[in-house]
Image (cartoon, rainbow, N blue to C red):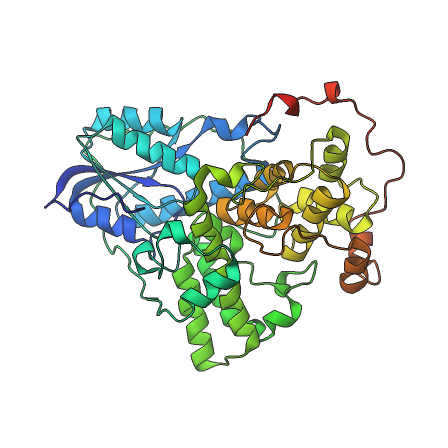
Length: 453
């Protein structure tokens, strides 16, 4: 079970609230629980140095677009906390070391957080519980529409496809009431707030998104204050443009806004303006996100395995030059090149574009899908562990798709979604000619032959 809470005690002297994927005050049940049970509260965010070092795929976990957006979200969160008499302590350290030092320094006796779909984030939580068994640990679901206890199946029996999941959960009632702490306990007396030596934040003026709950709420109001929800289904597959999709994903990814806030606004729109196929489709897309959150919870570390949740063998490998050219937008496929150059220049790509470039990497270039997922993790401003790795598994045929591997005809996709080559020309997606395998294995920094699942 995901709920690892102990029996609720009468109260704790010093609590620590560990912000992770919930960078907001509004509709944060976990923060409310901490506020109700502690006399003083230390609010902490851990920036892990490992995010900025090359991983097993030769990528960084946290690219500059993600980091710039996250940092802005933290600044915004700090302002919200200040308004309630609190502060945000940002620590540049690993979770185990950073939290361990704070537990000892402030004599913490209870730790609170929001549930997280990430395997490694949950591993840290479990290790903390093992190391500090005398402390109270409590978490609450703030990242999903449904609590695990309300699902009509056990987590180990999660339906193997989205369609089956949707049929099971759509009849359920969703509580869209927003639960928010109106006041917070003060920080521990004598607490210090040193300025951490964080990685530099590059100002990404080409990004269309500004991090933080205040900007998320502003966008929510603007979107549902317009008529855009009524035409969402007709424009959702466009490759470019601010108004063709809801654009909630970056703020959902770091928890600057909750899915319940979006659902409440959607319900209000349908009740007061219009309910049609497009407004339903917004809910449908939120269900897609919901499925992959529970998919990540259910499969844990298998989310990152080459054979995926299905343990399905696929005929791909690692071709250094092909992968590098795919990342750079320098392939024989103009539409793929344009999409990748858009991603590299903005930190964002349309959902249709993501499917096309992923299919290209797996099917046309025969590259191990995990390298593409890792590159998206580094580059995407709206990276979400469940949605990213789950969708890559889905497309590669090792995850939740009952049809098996998805293969997109790139020429057909171009004819449908960019018939005049407008998008391709805007992003300089001209086709690359010549060999795709000019670089020998020895020239690539990470040797795939040493990797084992």
